[in-house]
Image 1 (spheres, rainbow, N blue to C red):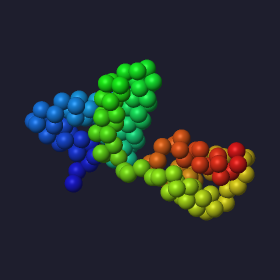
Image 2: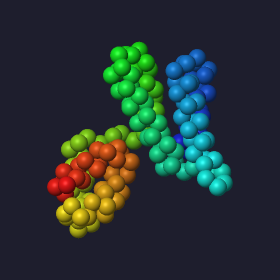
Image 3: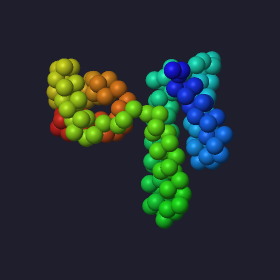
Image 4: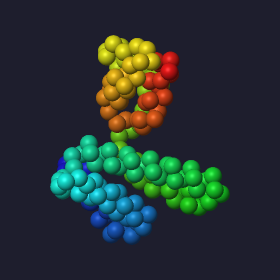
Length: 151
């Protein structure tokens, strides 16, 4: 199997052939975000699957935030469209951890790193993020680390 970017391109072509407008538009937007990340910086380069996954995670988060904003503004049709786009992007991301799974992983990471106390929030977050490895949003992980450290 090819890279995640190849899979996005292949799925885009399939969606175009089947005339699935929502999936086509969403994958085009996702691939544009990946291409922008590739050319960001001093020179263009190909992104690894982990880097593409990070870009898709950001795009998914944007969709969730936009859906919430539209729903709060009473624009349920636009909120539904944003949620649908987010679901399409989420197909390419690893399954997100539950709150209980995050709590268990954070506890183990803090014990292994020997971290305890408010003053060690930075090292605690580094250990927790490494243990979670992109399977949960940073905000959820940070909240659990703060809870366990008593911050």
